[in-house]
Amino acid sequence: MLKVGVLGAGHLGKIHLRLLNESKKYELIGFYDADAIIGQKVAAEFGYTYFDNINKLIDAVDVVDIVTPTLSHYECAKKAIEKGKHIFIEKPITHTLEEAEELIALAKRQGVKGQVGHVERFNPAFTSVKNAIKEPMFIETHRLAEFNPRGTDVPVVLDLMIHDIDAILSVVDSEVEKINASGVSVISNSPDIANARIEFKNGCVANLTASRISLKSMRKSRFFQKDAYISVDFLEKKVEVVKMKEAPENPGDFDMVLQNAEGVKKQIYFENPEVADNNAILDELETFADAIAQQTTPVVSLEQGTNALRVALQIIESF
Image (cartoon, rainbow, N blue to C red; front, side, top):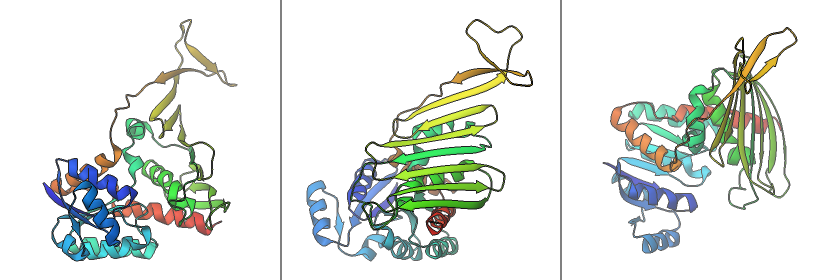
């Protein structure tokens, strides 16, 4: 078992603490929070060991789980990596691209592994169809949430849209060529609703919308590719796969057949991939333990987390 310590005991930090405490792949040593009052309260309520010194906690573990505000990600990660510790770091990886790139270089020098907490990569709806998404040419995503003051210290692109950016980059095997975007600040000082159009060098186009001032929640992505349409509902954990194939010469009474202007006939059929129930946060933490044990690349590497941040910042710059 890997000894692990958590930095940050806020809303998400407490979830990580509970799951790591339950995991059979980690031994939870304790946690640190810059606010001693919060730290002592969490320790008293849940029984986790509170460290009042960040360096003492880092020294006591093999893996440091960083669930602090984004502005402190870099300093926390740097301390851990310099001490030779593996790091799991919540998204976005850092506040700036320069900080992220420095962490990548530092981790390589120290020979440690890092994973970024892009939890939607572990959503069972997405994982059930990810291998079926091949060379998509048009992607449309909607990530809408009701207003919550937590997270409004950053633009909605870094708060919500970055989930979809990361998912898209994981299935589109091409470099970004052009980005056009717009954002509007409605309640917060930073944009609360944003739309971005990303054009890739291979011709794929992705249209992303994110809002944190909606009346209802929605987290849907649609992938269009040759002979297939794939819809992923991240919120309801449902998928819809519609495919086309050459129509049979003698279609059955219930076969759905379309004919185009050139007279080519295609049959429409549906696939229903099994969507297994899971805890995505536990899965991402435990796959990181596997990557460390097996000396493999983490599912969401520091480089991939940095690529998602790079595109997110380009979107913000184009507002």
